[in-house]
Length: 115
Figure 1 (cartoon, one colour):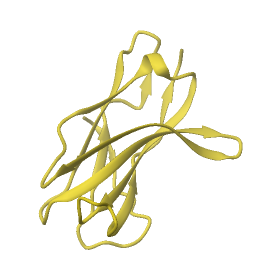
Figure 2: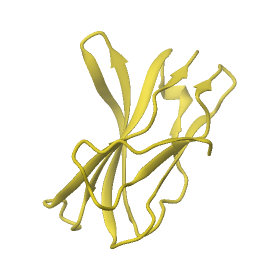
Figure 3: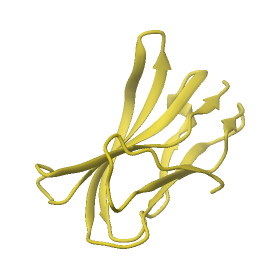
Figure 4: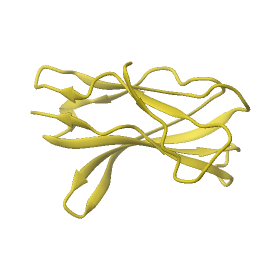
């Protein structure tokens, strides 16, 4: 995991970093591998979205849910379901399992997929 960025939509004291395993994916690639992590704090409940850039903005294509304290296990979004384009990972974090207490929104750097 080399490509990471912490971009909270609103300032938070405990930032989350989202890392993907490459800046671009060629036709032979199988998946985009993603890890979200933070330095410390309480359990985070999240929904992670794979988004594709269109002329009218970012559109969600897939999502994964989970929870973590320090870091997520590696999450995979499979290339076979994607078309050529620019993508990013969006993570919405919550402080409760019911996901009613939103604590922040975070983004990875964008990455390219070529099919």
